[in-house]
Image (cartoon, rainbow, N blue to C red; front, side, top):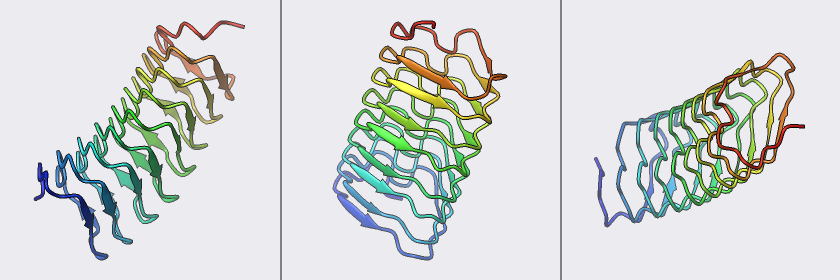
Amino acid sequence: AFCSCNSLESITIPDGVEEIGKYTFNGCRNLKQVVLPRNLKVIGFGVFYNCNSLESIVVPDSVEKISEYAFGGCQSLKQVVLPRNLKVIGRGVFCDCNSLESITIPDGVEKIGEYAFSGCQSLKQVVLPKKLKSIEYGIFYDCKNLESIIIPKCVEVITDKAFCNCKSLESVTILNSNCRIEERAFMNCPSLLPE
């Protein structure tokens, strides 16, 4: 509907809208301010992909799913407030959000898709949810400034390349002693020294 609308700088989506369909604001490079509706349930595939001027977003508590690449490539995105009822963060949702420095993922989240935070070069701090069962493929790939991470007790597997190229990663605390770590999960993490 508004795809690649470069004159659009702000939008308030009215209450009553429950789903924003795929690619709705994709490529709106000057979109700086978005107010999402209170009853929103789903943010669709690539909705805000490559909205390079978007600096912050507050996702309402009604949202249970953020679909694939919804905020991917939002290079100015610094502040994200995720809803407490969120259950699923799709593949690549925040990939290449180069300005994002920290994020707290609500405890209700059970699944975070592959590459969800890949290429977030400024990301230093992440709080993972307690119910998370796996750290998916490439989830923090190329997060060059990530310094430490605590892996919650429910996590059963850290998959291939989950933390690949995390060059500043110095500390990993795994709370589940039975957690399976795949062979290249921490590939090319030169600051991570074995104890």
